[in-house]
Length: 432
Ligand code: GDP
Ligand code: IMO
Ligand code: MG
Image: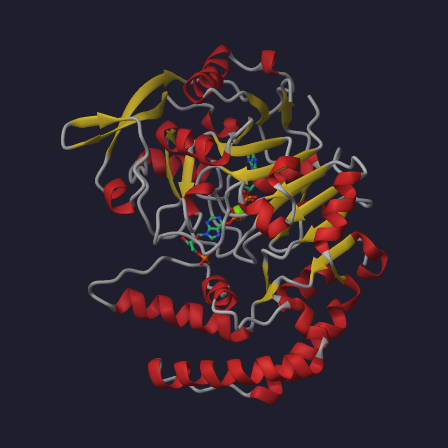
């Protein structure tokens, strides 16, 4: 079967290890595309012991000859973009045309980040409301402007007159909001305008038409990998709304945010952590507030790479995973962090939810219903061995193979790649 065009998505609440799986698969890919989200993402890649974190650039950037595309569905923070490009090795001058940013991507302005933080603080302070626990990267406020059709796009940064008009309108509106709603100082147009023109000058060589780039790659039989950010349960439509991000993180988001028609995708890869984590607020049925959660966090080094917050941890949730398999049409699972489960006395997997004495294996489409469910677990024997040096499925202890077998049986999706450590080489391929 040919797998030239693949979507790779997070099947849980983000931080499944998408960056490291993209990095491993990018060895065989010609093009890697980010299609949604922004610098709220933190994708870690470890090569030769050196850690690289990508917030905006596709995780394929470490290979010298990959075309990396930032699609129109992304909200792009130019300050973050510039610092990420400047931090690249080889230096930016050598990147040439291998990095293309869609002119249609929306620009995260400094006021989006301020409004994000202020709105979170206001929500937290209200007795009837609750904060989402956003990353403070201006994601929601930027997407609001996009859908309100007042957003500034990357293409505007190199059109001084259009930029001036759009920015004036936004500065007026945002200043009113800052002053009247939040009692904060308003914005200085001139300062922002000069900054934005500077961003435009830096970004000009990278701005292009991502749809043409991707279409021509697909027509020429190139291998294209779409790199999702966040995860299915943070998707604005299909996640645990309102405790979600503001973009389409599911596989369908590739088509609009990454510009390729549905019929051209060969396969969807779901990245699944061998247990569950979540950062920020919102329901999480298998969250463990005791020693298991603490142990998973310490062994798995579960601290956010974007905000440094400790991640909430708990056992694998098959009910939620089956939902992700359905929503995304998963063709294969990349199972990460299996090594973290070594040495537990027993492993648990949630197979059903119980509400008022009734059991169900269906993931509820309401965060408020999900909040009230109790997980029903099946227990599995663990293994004592360090599995980080295993490079084939058969080298894994029987209990680890059984754990994988259970995931496959319960979801009907094969596990084709297994992460046994954070490094590029710590990967087992199995009929991938
Ligand atoms: P992403 O946002 O989905 O790309 O994931 P993050 O980079 O935010 O978080 C995943 C973390 O797990 C990173 O620190 C990775 O280095 C690490 N990681 C990924 N895969 C594995 C694995 O198989 N084993 C271990 N021990 N760590 C892993
Ligand atoms: P990657 O790509 C984990 C969470 C935030 C918050 C909610 C909304 O690294 O997997 P936002 O700033 O997007 O408005 O915050 O979404 N969140 C993530 N959690 N991994 C991420 O990205 C996330 N990006 C956003 O913690 O709960
Ligand atoms: Mg992350």
